[in-house]
Amino acid sequence: MFKKTARYATLALIGLLPMATTASAETLIIGNFGTPIPMMTKVNTEEYAKAMGYDVEWRKFASGTDVIAAMASGDVKLAALGSSPFAIAASQGVPIKLFMIGDVIGQAESLIAHDGSGISSLADLKGKRVAVPVGSTAHFSLTGALKHEGISESDLTILSMSPDQIAAAWEQNAIDAAWIWDPVQSQLLKSGTRIMGADETAKWGYPTFDGWVVNSQWAEENPEAVAGFVKVTAAADAAYIDNKDAWTADSAEVKEIATNTGADAAQVPGILGGYTFLKPADQVGADWLGGAMAPAIKSTAEFLKEAGRIDSVADDYSQFITLKPLQDTMGE
Image (cartoon, rainbow, N blue to C red; front, top):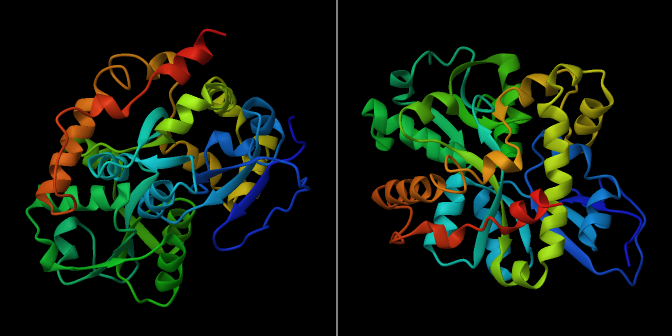
């Protein structure tokens, strides 16, 4: 029943990495952001298809808002989703569950100021044009940073742009700064300066992470598939966690990530260093999905409600978290 290939596709360019498929295959679409992280070493192999029992189509999204829409429509059953978009989706009643943490965001998402913009601190953003994918973790970090500094959003011009749009606007000098993730962040740093990263806003009470979410009913009907996804992803993370120094620009792993994401291989080791990756045993613990995560998501939702992004906050966000796929994998 397992098919021999997985297809990697993006919304902007379907078939960027064409692979053979078969007409009889049952295909599962998995959403992602094309972020240079360890599991991207596996997206162009047979491993996910074999572990999950589906042909896999990898679909790249520009923001969490797009992922929420795709999952609400039922088109996508499993996807990457940032912490703030997850809080929005859960609060709006989208039937999804968070089952795995992909990465904890540090300097992998940052505020970058264009050379010559006159921006050297948050205070300098007043009167400037700042781009960010609205509804993303980067947007949450930007909003939190402004609140921490006592800066009103009306003091600057916030432009909602996808990562690709930000890169283009940057080259045209159409924006003064952007809060964005890699690989676009690394591109901007060639002619810009990092003002701060999400690691700093996390210290101010605005932590962010990228998680993996799944349609609740589909997860109940396909527990082996979800566990298979966790198994392959956790193995990729562990390979990096246990031997970070070996993931150099000329290593096979980094070259594969570069090929599958469009990132510069020379920059991938630094990009990886901007994240923290967690093994399953840590994820199910009290500091993460097994305890502190639900209150943290509620706090994020309360902040988003205050900011006018959502209308209501759930009493308890543990109902939107499941430990079963991680626990099933740990028991093997």
